[in-house]
Image (cartoon, rainbow, N blue to C red; front, side, top):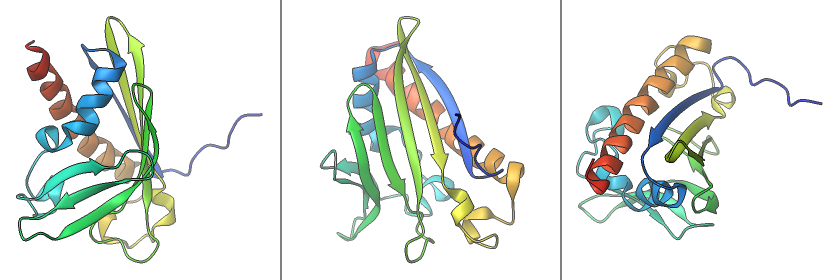
Length: 166
């Protein structure tokens, strides 16, 4: 029996390929996140001088550290499987209470490198009028989220290429 399909607009999935082994792709994604995650209002909510990092591996968190010493927890790390899989909660700055989504990143050996597939899901749990939706629902919303992650994954791919000198 197959799993039920997610609700329209509940998730976005992007895939990219990088010319390194899965364990190295995972390392760049996690250890160098602040180097590839774009700055500016679209990607850091106006906190351009914030530093992003994963703290503590499995059971740890993805955090933003601001120059004034303030730390904002974006979400808990739910799975930390180097070279295979990363799963973490995602809480935008405008999420309230228990609102959260999940980001799962899979790393699979492919064509002398790694196929990296990122899925951001759980959006259906947020109210239709939530500010993170920018007034969009269904496919237009998941398309917007997919383009946002696509831009970040392009930056990630560029960082991997810089690291290996290609």
